[in-house]
Length: 357
Image (tube, rainbow, N blue to C red; front, side):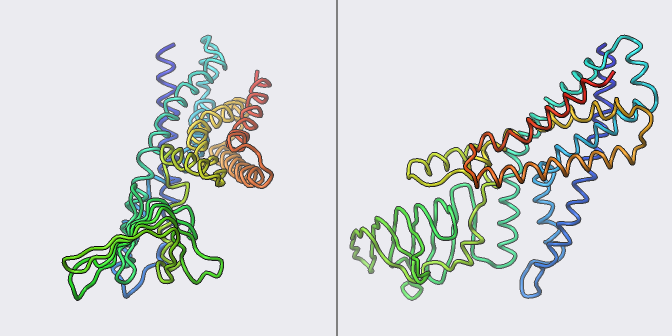
């Protein structure tokens, strides 16, 4: 039986890898064509730089496509075995459908762990490198990192710990450079800041101000301070990190911060749980693939299996998007919104599997 398990793994894994690479290269090509719209003659961001930017983001593309590559690849791998009567021979040798499905699910667990590692440690970092590279080449004066964002605006060098939106910031340090004196003339540190309703100024909260003048320095405190020209919204739109770009640890810290300050955290909680449900969806795809292959046996060609896989993948993606949006709109728990598409497709796959003889 161990020999049959290795043989199944080899065939399924080979088909999954070919499908995974093909899908990712296809979507990478689409992203590259779209990125050409940002190529500008007055910057250092040309065609080769756009290609390098897409390569930096390739781990994110690989992670996003992984569940659907598992679905289509397993359909192809198991389908080829069924078309060559190898599945029939295995069953005749006493290897039941349940054992075949169990073997594919063991492979799915290994793949789920690898997918989790890619989504947690590789994709967020390479995506940050990609954004920093693009900003630098476009000559935008913004640098993103795990410790926040550095932004240059005129004579001000600004460090922001958290950018929850283009209208609100946490943990701001502002260093005003006096070019004539050749040094820093003022340092502002604020607990938080928000854009006023009139959109004409920034309001800094709990401010410590330090003024430096040659050999002397003065320190003062302000409960609130207005800064009209602190940062334009355009730059903050660039610097704001989306929940999709954060790993689970950073999301957990941000959710805790939002709760401690009585702020909404549903969007970040949903993304946090998706860090776990996305890798586990590979098991769902394998459960769906088995009854489709065993039901069709030799009757379906490769083209039909690919079409079925794409159709199921699109259906899963649409259902996931619909449940996520309606869940946030109607106040469903984020965990339920993240898990529900996976549960529904798992039940559908198991029901179909029960009908297979």
